Image 1 (tube, rainbow, N blue to C red):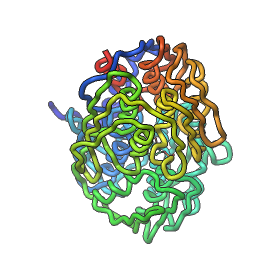
Image 2 (cartoon, rainbow, N blue to C red):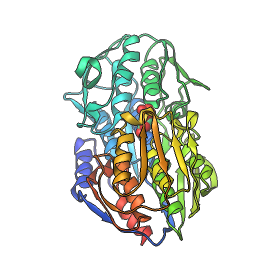
Image 3 (tube, protein in one colour):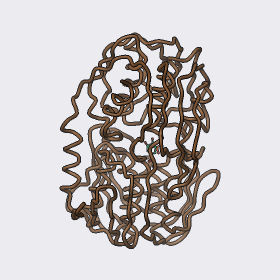
Length: 450
Ligand code: S3P
């Protein structure tokens, strides 16, 4: 395929295609079982980082398996806006990085869309760049807390201001010289950790982040893969700046957070046996496998290997009788995006499932504690909201009915999974949001559940 040149058109066109054919409301019927072999799209967190670090690297990086969902396209467009040249060769993207000082001041506001990762990680990068930038996003992202990154970055000398007394986007960043430092984050968040490390890697000295439990470590792994000297501890990570990144070949594994929908779908739908190929199983992300196995789910990890510094496996999952469990502590950040679909599994499990220490769910794309209670409750699930989690009383079945995703991709896909094992059809409103993380989700679901 002929290489296409660096232009926002590329991203705009892809975004349009993603949105164009997405009906807002979908009706899903119970399934007779899911069988076959599937490949889920590239990991969202790793894709963001592949774009960011390739853009900051010296030389050309080749990125294969990149997730072309709206969130990652927002990150790609942001770097294109700052002068990074990108060639789309179909199966792979060539990103021509200009080094850590190679970015240009963006001429317009950077639109992060729905993506918290884009906004928070870019804040860390932009705080240390010698120019002015503004980050904004959709109505959901503009409601999400930004003080969590503004506070540590400001302590490093960054000049960032935002709406509502510097707590919400849009964020205006006057980049400049920062100071290295140490930050003890009150929450286990890879976005906070990464924002501080990305700021720290641009300045002289050691910058260290401590966190209460280890959050996903894709930044640390990929920075190391790009040649950065970064140290990892049980309670965080440290970078010694200023660093330089070397362009690399990156192979992005399948997203375990996307695989999670199919794992649960197969576990709760009688007659199912599914092989999910090439899924990232980084231990800081694989909490969903531990949770589902503890619930009695049959999931085997086959063909374990490493891709660009990330562990990968094929996952074989079979319909299983599930039982309720308690989930808390260090397991929570390791499965933070999977709780909506864990609750679906819990509805079909015997007994109670209790999720605690998960207050972070209140500040995701939606308040996921409220959204899960509302949506699963409407189709007959017994779900109680707790301040920092959820209590699900398994009944083994769901009535069916009509729900709204609240514009949250993971709520929409969780309800689609619930529909497969429900007594009658589930109608889901506002489903276009699935394009943020999983283009092709509905087609794949139909393909293997018929
Ligand atoms: C992400 C970190 C997590 C996760 C999000 C992606 C990342 O957020 O929920 O979907 O790529 O760093 P927090 O850092 O806020 O926990």
